[in-house]
Amino acid sequence: MSRPSARRLVSWLAAALLLALSAPLDGAEGGKPVPSESFYALKTITLAGQPADLGQYAGQVALVVNVASECGYTPQYKGLQALHEELQAAGLRVLGFPSNEFGGQEPGTPEQIRSFCERKYQVSFPLFAKQETQPGPGQSPVYAFLTRAGQVPDWNFCKYLVGRDGRVLAFFPSKVKPESKELREAVAAALAAK
Image (cartoon, one colour):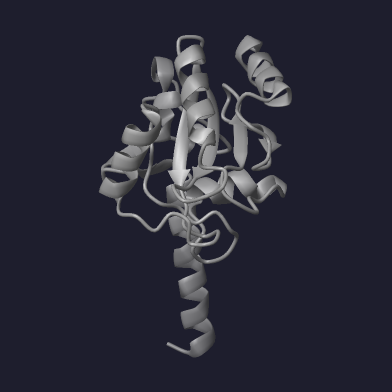
């Protein structure tokens, strides 16, 4: 096989793999397929290392946050947990994705992250495996989806608000706290949308 043909084959295989990874998933709420342009069409890994289908949150509103244990913004865990407790019954899901990209501020193992979050902030919302948020070859599929509109995390505790249909509704930088008026209003509007 000549070099151009080998490159073409690799490109086709990569495209096929990306297509397979973004294919619609069955089993979303009500047994309805989730469109591939939806956050809820993605799969990932829990902090405990188990497969996780984000389709389980379809039809709800998600606040997706890149978290870290040793950051100046780490106390935001308290506000995220309060938001989770207050609005979970209304359909909000806070989803934490640890990242060690910014200042190496999430160096811990999954067990250390879980222990820290539970002990210090009583975190009970879902936490997932460490993710790379920045565009490039290591970027996770979750963040490839979230950042495709151009809003890319520039530090820990950036927040994406995802609507019931799985589309990104808003982006909030690190400095916007979970209890801030602008974030709370956006969450309330997303929850009110049917």
